[in-house]
Image (tube, rainbow over all chains, first blue to last red):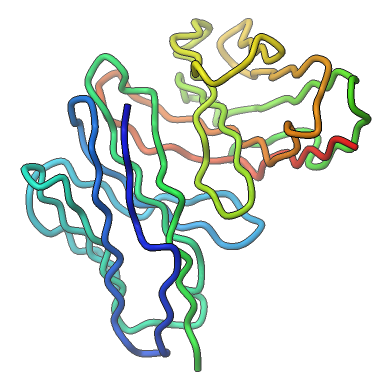
Length: 112
Length: 115
């Protein structure tokens, strides 16, 4: 099984930076996904980390430490449209590659 | 529109009735997943297919739930004898891959309300 822990909610102002932490315990490890989900909509893919380190993609960056079971998603230059839930999804062992487990999500609220 | 589609988008039913949902994945995707999501929670894995083979089913899933993907294309999820606790958003996702990792593309979901 997998335990996934991420904060419930974070609030930040437009233009600021927010870091969403995710800690996890998995049966084996094959990588970690971050998804964004706006209210009432389906999740959309943001990033994937399989090796330790930082992956940068525009205003969003994601970091992974496999040994610590830790990842974070960094949102820079926040915009109002970034208000959404951010879901951490570590992928378990090779024999269960298809079984994605999502965290409960971190609701980010961007204020003017 | 070549994304994942789901039908219906909304379903209201009375307790005890059976319901069936359909998912049409992106055409070249060989993997298909079903999730259930309730308010304030992340998607909860239900089951997944590679082509027509159902490879895993969540242990949390009762026998009232069944899914099929008969020709390796569209999939159906049936819930028999619905209960109020089944009220949720049912999400379908698809991906393409032969290895261990793959980005999933989600459909818009079917919102089920059991009265």
